[in-house]
Image 1: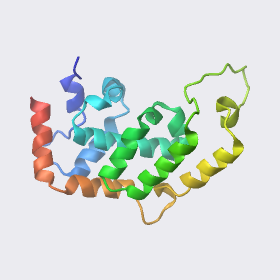
Image 2: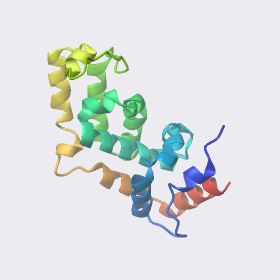
Image 3: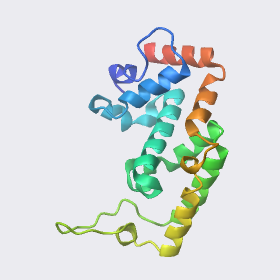
Length: 180
């Protein structure tokens, strides 16, 4: 079953000619809306260009709101390898390398495990996932080096630079994919 065309079209700016900035802004403004839930749950089926943008937006959103551990606990963490590949594709190499180092430290941790909590009970990440404090400290130190803490790195700059390379061809291909 393929993704509904009307849902995919919501990701694309409605104007005939649009820039990479327009496309990223459009996707960022609608991707978390209810009518796009089917798209969010099946990102792998999207054209490569849209996947690239969504992986970057998802990573940035999770990291900004929930931190690196929240990224892994939420569904976005299921796409860690896709996120790393995307960061490499857009040439955000330093952040891709940092994510790979973090990945090595979280191997064996089950982020999907659920625990029963009593009303008002508060737990820590370490308790929910039985993770060693030393490893948690190493993860925090690596996460502190990601682009969010950097004045000279912004993954959206990398994304826009990537999208801008040969934009007319990318834009045409995207429009053809959507119209097919």
